[in-house]
Amino acid sequence: MRAREEIMRIVFLLCACMSIVAVAAICLFMFANGFPAMAEIGFGKFLLGTEWRPGQELFGIFPMIIGSIYVTAGAIIFGVPVGILCAVFLAHYCPKGLYTILKPAVDLLAGIPSIVYGFFGLVVIVPAMQAVFRTSGKGILTASLLLGIMILPTIISVTEASLRAVPEAYFEGSLALGATKERTIFRSVMVAAKSGVMSGVILGVGRAIGETMAVIMVAGNQAAIPDSVLKGVRTLTANIVLEMGYASGLHREALIATAVVLFVFILIINVCFSLVKRRNG
Image (cartoon, rainbow, N blue to C red; front, side, top):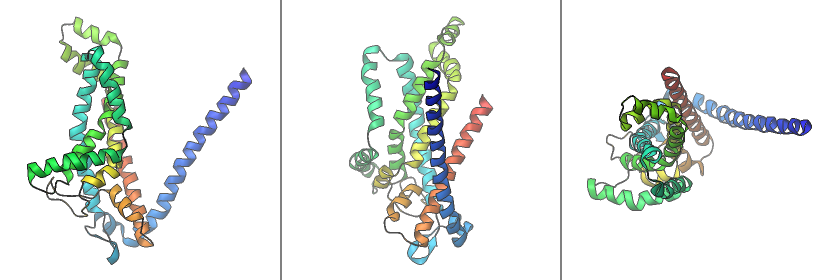
């Protein structure tokens, strides 16, 4: 028995080491190929340049950075409140009969491929935007709404699990002290589960900022700084996917450098959320 446990410990250790090596190799590849391109283009021109014209050796990704920020922020505005409130309903208000239907439906949403979401946005949301705003229908608002829908399953599942993990004594104790059910949920249970809720939000934001195919289909893909939420934008991920197939030389290296910026961008978001959790912990 002890020998078997030792063998499994070694297997688990090797798997953990392989994961670390894989992540390190990816980071090494990106930074090794991305930083030389940034240095050749110029860090200021690359990060703050407003024109992306590979044919003229102009590689400014600032419009794509702004586009990614706008679309991700919009997805947070649409998806986070709805996801958290839906999780509260499932955990504390939903009848058992209805729960057996809604819970599998939420899990099913998490398994739908992003290209299907993109097609839904293209044939449903875009025409609706065209009818309401008299525009092309493709832009920040459309992409934000679609991404808000896409991050719902992640936020709902993680938040609900966190709420159910809170000891029942918190809920019953608050009610015994005279608090209403709503006040108990949002001032006692939600506070106790805030670490898990924040984790769900982080995972949702990570999916939103890293989404590609669905955004390409509904965002408009215009490499310019938008002056309205109805204007088309191009995100960092979309910029890489649209041009990597035919890029070469400095153009290809600039796209890899764009991936480095995206990686750092996600890292900064995770660090910020971690600092918020630590400060409120």
